[in-house]
Length: 76
Image (cartoon, rainbow, N blue to C red):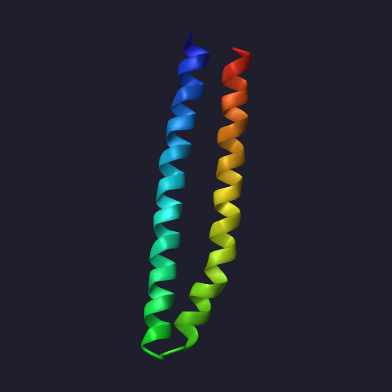
């Protein structure tokens, strides 16, 4: 029973981390669109564009870990 609770706790922690990363990604896109609409395409705009693939990779990695923990939970 303790192992199941540990896996559930890890899943909950990863879900919260996923929410934070998605929130940062949405804020990044909103900031980039605001810079684009204001026609101030500068270094900050390009840094936001470079941050998006990194955040996408982090989201995919977190979702894989969540899926792995769900599979581990099914085995228990």
